[in-house]
Image 1 (spheres, one colour):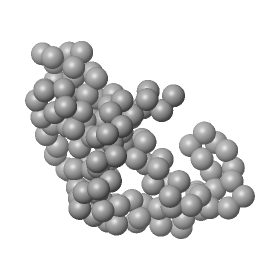
Image 2: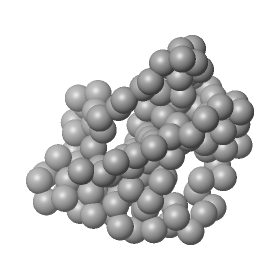
Image 3: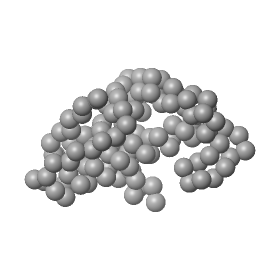
Image 4: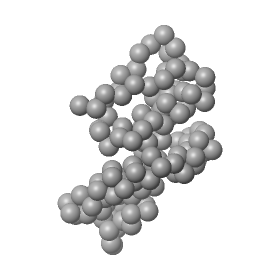
Amino acid sequence: RLARYIPAPEGFGQYSRTIAFKEYTDYVIRPSYALHARMGILRRTVTGQTLDADMPFRNFLSGRLLWDEAMGSAAANWVRDHPTGLLVGMIGSDHVKFGCGAAGRCARALKQGGLGGVRTVLL
């Protein structure tokens, strides 16, 4: 089931071993986790399940990585299926920073497939 969201597990795993990923985690994901904690929304999952305690950081991080990987993979699949098309995606800035979010994961998937690159503009 996981292969549906992570079609290239080796590339997915390599991301976590880069300096950029560590920076992304420290400067993007951890502050996002803290914000979610202050807002009191870490006791509710994206599927609507209510938890007895705040979701641990590890689970929050895993969810974000899976979310970014799924968005990046879906975008890469669209580009592969439409080689003469142009994909313009509008996503939150946290999914772009440090090249480790959805845009970076899309670029990795396209590079593995021998296709062109991804450009990001942070507004």
